[in-house]
Length: 244
Image (cartoon, rainbow, N blue to C red):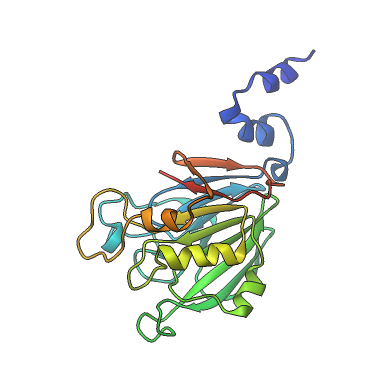
């Protein structure tokens, strides 16, 4: 038995994702993705040899007190150019405008949506994102408060992973609105973002995650750490990941 084989067998489960991708010589798509939370609605998604950063922010407004994610990624997907959900502080190809893109082997689709509940008349428009990475389909709804249109639902499909803002306020879905969209899209995994964690923040009209979780009562909820690992071919059962 080779030392290489013994090494692969000795790995702990927490490191299995990276071991399969890099150390044991399997293609990245076989292991799915890793997702790391940086607070607010900033997530780094790594898989298929690529990294996608969602909504880098300045520590202002509802993101006050958080460490700014000054990171490097292949692609940066922003919901808007507001400082708390699309700050140009990270390095990588920055996308915020709707459109079809092919970058570093990834196909990304951005769709226009009102940023508020008044057709965009108050806060303008946001961008919803859809792409596939590591064998998993993603939908990123991190910066909107408007209901999805029939066209939106067709374009977004039923994603494997849905990233959705749930904190309420003037620019973000509240718990009831977010739960309605989750039930409409029927994703396999849900990652709630953009809600107040811990103490309330001055000049922030968002609330915590509890209203959303109350609306999703009966769905499996997993409170995780800063990083989670998802393999492709996820089971159909919906799971909500509440990340630290």
